[in-house]
Image (cartoon, rainbow, N blue to C red; front, side, top):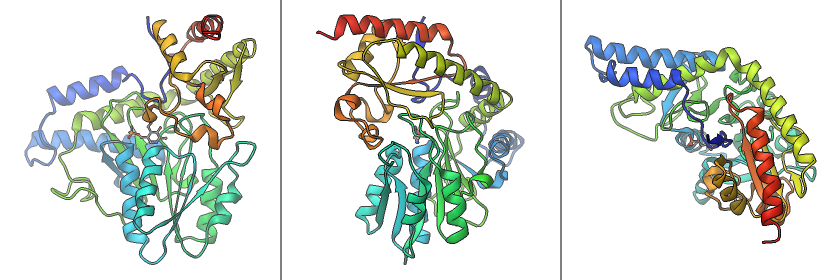
Length: 377
Ligand code: PLP
């Protein structure tokens, strides 16, 4: 039996999501823009899913548009906000630990005349809200901060920063990448005071290829894709009804158990941490303020890739860091204070609602044997 501990990279679709997708492919396959009743039935599947996501975020359905993934959502949010709101003002604030979908978009924007201010964690590896707030000046038109870091699970002070920014400089557009937070911790767009928020379905037990963008009423966004005018004229292209329906089904599946799952993640993380504290050569990279379902540590002396393949042979699947960096160092852990050797040996373990203590036992036993087999190799 495989032990899958790489849920921050992607998750196994839940039965409710699979059923919804299959139903929409077999029974509800019409084009949602078609005027006949089969089209209307497909459209109502989209509306149902939109309402489920909106309700989970405490916003209106009309404030949600579907995209192909969170990468598209962040690109759309940042590039089109730059087009609309970055004509006279040119500065954007972001964290230095964002996912590549934000960092690479920022790089693109900086090559096109925008000034990007990157805020790093302090020496203790923690992001401080005043560092973001103090960076905002008369030239700032946008701020983008992730809620939960995908590599070490650190929580960033999004709510506190956006709340103050909206009070002192209400014109600044606030975007949040909530991909690693949605349906795991409460994400309320009103409480967060954000204007734009990006989501991905495949991190919450729905299939890959579907994401969403929250656009607060009144915020003007330019489409990246022009065409038939779907998604309120903001994202042309025939909607993927099966994937959209699966996204909504996964939200509904998770919603009643969010608290229960969170408690389970705390237990699993404590169990893992205790076991690792009795294991040689371990250095914990996750910070005190990390979410319990993403845990990053280094087995000092064994490079991440070697460890990953060693574990893989025992049917245990983990990540060497960010999945998007494909084994390449992303540099994010160093931003949080890790030295080169620590970052080179980093392993990210991420739980799902199906993870059990026996999975942690298997992982820890494998690390103990790796320590004796690989350390001197
Ligand atoms: N943002 C964060 C924090 C992520 O972890 C990911 C995926 O790993 C993304 C954005 C991109 O999501 P997607 O794969 O849907 O493009």
